Length: 342
Image (cartoon, rainbow, N blue to C red; front, side, top):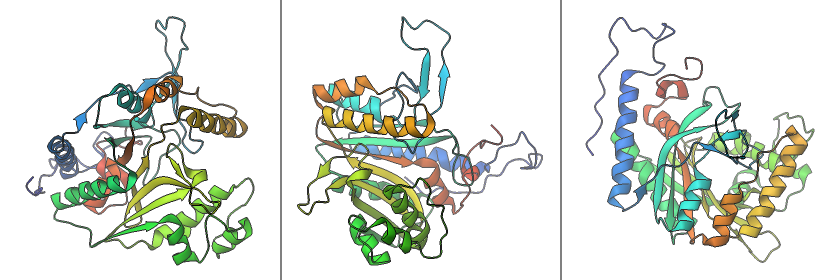
């Protein structure tokens, strides 16, 4: 594609101060259209099929750190629950398609997360998710970097360098702690002068705090940083690999452009029994914390039991990618109407 040319503004009588007016500039919305086109051409050239999956589901996400919306359906359900959950990702139905034999596929669409509103968050946002059959997470890292670089090129930018580093190596390099073996006291001490109420925090919470407060802010603005091979406790829907040292790793990666996280990917777990056990553990955490847990997605488990092909998948936040392309730290600047104007 050619390079995006800015220069189209709203008419003079459309002021950002008007409550009905868009939160983004006209150029920002034009750039979103260009980026959507780039994404579709990128995957068309590689033979990856675009699919559409349901936004409403009988089951919700299991991850205790993600809050889904739910609503009550008033029409005919043929005995099924009236409670339906808005998707936080298209992952579960896309994996059902993969188990059915769809092959390499992607979806570009809206997802919804409760409680996420602020400078870098909006309760509804655009996610690009894709799956590659026969790939592992390392091969998918390369394609994700290639897509991000192609997007940056639309606005005449590029990442100055690409750093691909193991999760354990990064914590040891930056903080001199082993995230797999360090005690909770050592993890707390590594936060330095960052004051956090420790009540109810788990080991993974401390590791996440170290990432967001001590490591992530130090990522160079012009660098794509990719972390891979996470602690097994942060596996989510990723495969585990035995390293032989008593600390298995999750075959997962996250991609950052500067300090902003853009993508999260997995070498996907295909074991239905293991996935059920993870769902049940997540549900127990949710019930203890919130008193409510979405139903486990039995249809996904049935699809995994039928046979998920070996594959890797990744979800990338389109709005955050647009933020980096435009050089803004406000998600409102890339949305037609952010949460406050919706």
